[in-house]
Amino acid sequence: MAFVLIHADRALTPTIEIPDAAILIEDGKIVSVGQRSSITAPAGTRMQNAPGLTVVPGFVDVHIHGAGGHDVMEARPEALSAIASTLARKGTTSFLATTVTAEPDLLCESVQRIADYMSRQPTADSTFPSAQILGIHLEGPFINSLRRGVHPEAWIAPPSVSLFARILDSAKGAIRLVTLAPELPGAFDLITYARGAGLIVALGHTDATYAQACAAIELGARHAVHVFNAMRPFSHRETGVLGAILTAPGVTAELIADCVHVDPPAMRLLISSKGKDDVLLVSDGTAATGMPDGEYRLGGFEVLVKAGVCRDSQGHLAGSTLTLDRAIRNVVALGVPLTLTLQMATLNPARLLGLETKKGVLAPGADADLVLLDAGLQVMGVMTRGFGFVPQR
Ligand SMILES: [Zn+2]
Image (cartoon, rainbow, N blue to C red; front, top):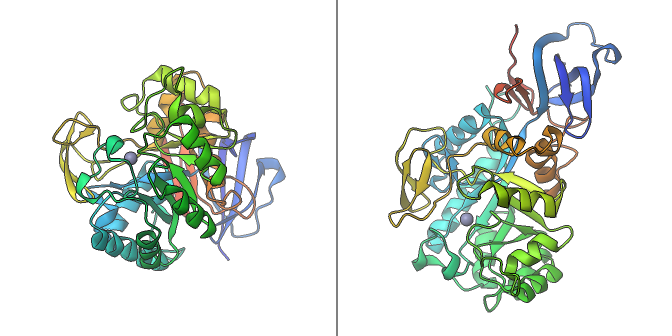
């Protein structure tokens, strides 16, 4: 049994602040968390000191298309490992591999290969850090072409239970979340079917009216992707899908907090209307994440990255190069307290996935997914399931 004890200036669990904190880890799992004086380390425990640093849970991102020069739809093991290790360096320790609209055979092949990788993905005997794929987020093809963003028009499909069942089958149970436009004919049947299969249904790439969005929420849709982006805009007389998302209790909302996709006042509006429990920071990251400016692929098409902003050939925003550490710094800069901001990148996404005792939290029994932050909220060390680097200063 290999014990490791991490000793840092403080821990944010994220809901509780512990000064002079220690975390005892055994075989990739947290055994205990508390003040240093309250934790007894068994003989032979390896000590890792992190003076001047704050230890927080690893970030959980439910919306990532790629990183490190690779897109999840390539789905080769080398591509997925490169994505996983690039993400881990910036503190994201688990994520949903997110697909874009594509030709159905290609989509089925991608989800099948991602599922194969997940079943074999490195566990505690590998060299780390490497983020863990928790499942697949199917973004498209059942979206509205009016709000498609950069999803290719040619492969957008009307909601179809039979096509969806085929994709689910290919993914062998790995799909956790499906984004759809509820106003399309057949969408309500698809929501009912997806809920019956135990999936999270998200509203996105949608031109839904307020009434249509409320009807979808009534049927069990409970999440909204990249809120404000690729949605019918808000008006005070027809508030549209945004009116429903901003006011429906329990509907969680993704925010791409790069200050490019959403302006800071709208970020504040979302956070103040949804509250600390229902906002999830996401990156919508693409292959260009962690890479220099240039040309990259998103699913089956090209995107151009200039000054870190991804756009398609028509200039539409095409995902981002954001990482959650930067998103956290941007939200804190708005004046949101650090503990609440961290919750939006850790506990809230874990809770959406039903994994809040395992991921996104520093608690006994949870995976040892940890991030060390300095006073400027820069990532100084990352541990994924017990493996990784902790500075010794
Ligand atoms: Zn999108």
